[in-house]
Figure 1 (spheres, rainbow, N blue to C red):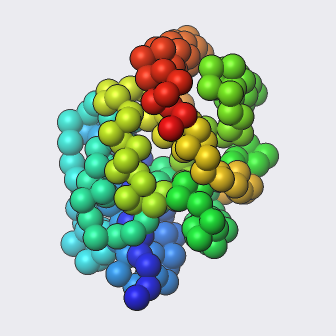
Figure 2 (figure 1 turned 90 degrees about the vertical axis):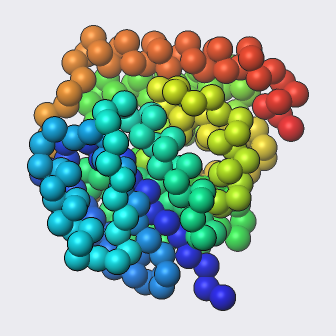
Length: 241
């Protein structure tokens, strides 16, 4: 029996990209018959909800969940919980802004026999120098706290065995700012080979960032504090099972 996956995407005010992004992923999903797409709309205030509903009505493999705006972290967490309840063996998460080439999915899919948790890593990032530097600082902070080096712990391009994801979600506190980082840490501490597969950014018209430098620093500081708190509360025995 052929393995299937469910592709999960959070979406917030992506009217410029969401239709093109979903269309670009359709051939990938259809290449593994029985696979599906789940979009969780985080209370978008633009045309994103209408576009998603229109696309859903045209495709049996596209599922859409609308929710109030709660932020990226809570939206991803909900998407994972919904994905865990499906029949699929694998969960793949990416963002709805079309930043990545869908064809890179197959690079991760080929590694699924060797790991339950596989990460891409952004290669030649299009992000600002500040964002890139902060990402590196997060990697260093993770290494200091947990003793594992993860090149791109928050990358929105990851393939996870569904049963294993269910186990991880029980160990991650709800409401945290960046659940993907915590999932990556737990997988690394569990001894999963993350692979860190290089991804090529897909050029597209960038939307204006909603994060000012002040907000970005505040978000990163919050992430650093949450990681420290996570390390203290879970302890060595819980994290390194």
